[in-house]
Structures are given as C-alpha cells and as structure tokens.
Amino acid sequence: MDVLPVIGEIDWAITSPPYNLNKACSDGVTTSQAKKMTEKYERWYDDDLPELDYQQWQKDVIAAMLSIVKNSIFYNHRIRYAWHSRNKYQPPSKVHHPLDWLRDFPIWCEIIWDRGGTSTPTGRFGQAHELIYQIGKPSPERYARSYGMTDVWRVPPAPSEGHVCAFPVEIVERCLKVTEFADSVCDPFMGSGTTGVACVNLGRKFIGIEKEPEYFDMACERIRQAVSQPSLFLEPEAGKEYQEVLLLGEADAED
Image 1: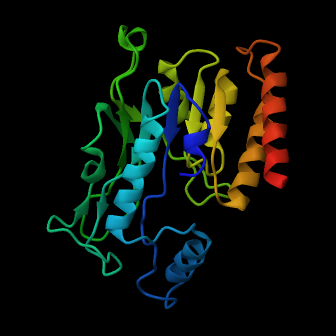
Image 2 (image 1 turned 30 degrees about the horizontal axis):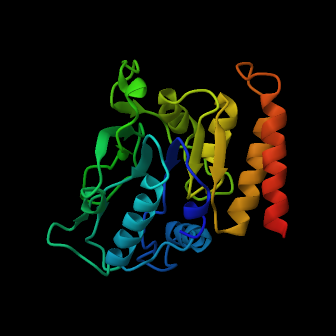
C-alpha cells in the first residue's frame, strides 16, 4: 500500500496474495503427521488476520492496483471452508469465497485453475481447483481476438523450494499470453518471484513488491538465474536491461 501509489502507470498486474488460512495443526504433536504439519506451519508466513480485516485489505490493494493498471489484474485465490475452530469469523454459509470481496470490482473473466490433484480431506470431496479472476476490461486491441485457450487450466502446483506455497510459473505465463513484448507487469505480493521469472522468460518488464526480506532475497536470486539463462525469444539487449533493473532494486533494498 506504500509502494503502489508511487510506481506510476503499468500495463498489467498478476498476483497471488496470502489466503488468510489461519494455519494451525488441530491435534498438536501427538502423531508423526501432526509433528510434520506443525513444523510446516511454523515456517508459514504471517497469515492470520481477522477475516473481515483481511477482506478489506484485499479490497484496498485491488483498488490501489486498478488506479494504476491500464489493462487487467490477474488475481489468484481460492474458496476457503470455515468450519474449523481456528476460523474466528464463520459466515452462515461456512465458506469464504473470493467473490465476497471481489463483487465490487469489474471482473472480465473467471479462470478455473485445475491443480490436477488434491489433499485428502476428512468427509469432503477433495478441493482440486483454485480461481483466477481477470479484473478490469483490457484495451480493445487486447480482447479483439481469441487467445486459443479455455477458461479451465490444468497446471500442477509448483514444488516448494524455500517458499511454503510457490505459484507455478506456467500459470503466470498463461496470463502473460494476453500481453505484448516489453509490457510492464506488477506483482504486489511477489513472494519467491514467480511472476518476475515468467516476465524475464517472456520479455516483459517487471515490478515486484515483497515485505518479507527472506522472500525478497529468494525472488532476487530466482530472477537473477532467469536473467542468466535468457530465452531464445528475447532480443539480445533485453537481458542486459533486466540485469540493470535487478541490480538497482537490490541496491535500493540494501539502502
């Protein structure tokens, strides 16, 4: 919220925010599985706001993005069931749906992310999908043609490499299909830098915002590696430009 108002106009935004999962292991450390999950949750980022505060925060961030984005925001989230005692706010439906806070914004498209697998819930069909909302009508030249894809994307989740729930690069690259070379893309919840890696791969300009120093450093390293292995589809000078931007960002962070 501090950075978005000062970065100027951008073409697109692609992001997957924290889901406010209120992660907690219900059975303590009485079993080996419980111990494993407790250790995982201890590594989880801060993700435990009062639900109504969380929803208002998301509204504020989306409104801030819409004020600077020329085309669309791709916003990934999921349905969360609220039956567990850790869910301090439990609506009558017992479901927190992204539309609870997105219905006030201009949704252009809803995309189903089929993760191709699921965990094993107790007494409920496994949740195997997430949702990606394209918010904001893109400029006419961006929607006057078919993109050659349906609104159901089967993409396996990314392996956890330092981040507890990394976003798949392929999902971001599919979103980037509607963009053009050298378009600017912002991710205000950069995490481990997946959106930045996809932008480097496809020759888009990238602005990433991340408040956790550990994940910021991880994102810089991932983007550096992507820059060092430029895509065959990039123009020769593009890699140099990204290298300069990345190093400038690191210098600013150190100051």
